[in-house]
Each structure stands twice: as structure tokens, then as C-alpha cells.
Length: 247
View 1 (tube, rainbow, N blue to C red):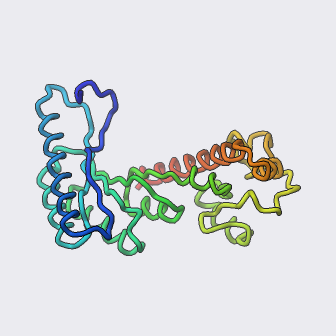
View 2 (view 1 turned 180 degrees about the horizontal axis):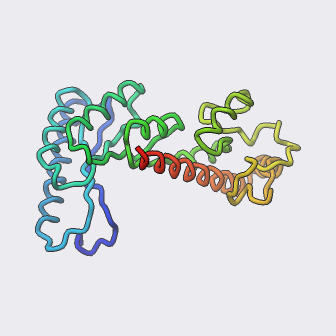
View 3 (view 1 turned 90 degrees about the vertical axis):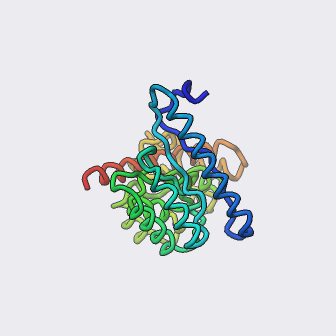
């Protein structure tokens, strides 16, 4: 099956535990993930043409001991994979602890090793991950915000700061405005001036119309807000990627 895959890269199957689970369960998770990585690398090694870029998961880092063990295990195999994937990064409670973990991981591998996370749940986490040198950042934030009727009110990193300062009372911690708020009842402007997304382009759907859709419990409201949020997140990621390439 592996040699028929057409994708350019793959993340090795791994197990993941909740921070509050017992030590025995965490150890089982770590060892199981190690076994799966070995099986994957051995299988790919047997193929004549290996075109897949393999991402190896960091199986368990609930303590200094388990983190050290996992890093030592992966460092011995680092010539066989392209990057390190850190499951549960977004569940780490403090920014200080997330930065510390990322730094320890980067110190354990070659400078060209890439790092990725599956989910950044807030704008701050996205920017923090990029600043820490994480090159692959997954997020479900555009959909999550849309389900709460929250629309992105920033167009890029530079403008977000000025937007926050001008209308902070209307924005949440992610720089989003709540389109269900009555303040948008007669607002004929697009979600974000200058945005070329499906919802904003040519002022096709105004804030007041989207507000009406929300009050009428129409699914279209979430679809339009999601389209807008995704458009802005992709622009943000493109800018972060371009800035990273210049460093």
C-alpha cells in the first residue's frame, strides 16, 4: 500500500495521551508510537524508490524523563525522516512551556530538521509557533471561529495591531468580531474593507446581511464567515512563510 501513495509526505501513525492519564498508559503510548515508526521506516527502506518525506511524531513529553527518552530515540534516526511532528503542542498550558519544548526539540536535531504541529487554536499560538521556527502549522481556527459567528477583522500582521487599538471593544482576543452582535444590524460595509474573499469581494455580502442570516439561523452565515476567515488565515500563513524564507 505504501508504495502506491501519491502524496509527497506522510506523518507516521502515533498514539497520544491526555496529560492527566496514568504513567502506565503514557509509557504504553510512547512505546507503541516507537514501534510504529520503526515499522514505517523499515517498510519504506525496503522500497527501491522512496519518494515520501517522512514526518516522525514526538510520542510523549509529559515529563523531562520521557521527553529525553523520546528525543534520544528520534535523534538516532534523524537521517531517515524530514521533520518532527509535535502532537498536543496546543494543549500545553503556558507559552513559556511551549517555547521551552520547541527549543529543546530543535537543539536535539540537525539545523535543517523541520518541525510541525497539528493544531494552533488561537491567533497567538499561530504567531508563537511561527516565531519559534515551526514551519508546518495546522489549525481549525477559521471553522471554529465561524461556528461562533466570529469573523477575522485583520488583514495581516502589521494591520492587526492598529485594528486592535482602534476598535478593541468590538474584537476578541483573536482579533475577531462577533457578527451576531446587534451593532452590525444596519452595517452596510463588508466584513473587512479591502478583503477579496467570497464574502467581502465587491461588497456582495454586508455585515448587516450576515447578521440577518445568523438571526434567521441560516447555515449560509457560517459558510460565508468561514470563507472569509480561511482567506485571511491563508494570507497570514503566506506572509509568515515569505518572512521565514528571508531569514
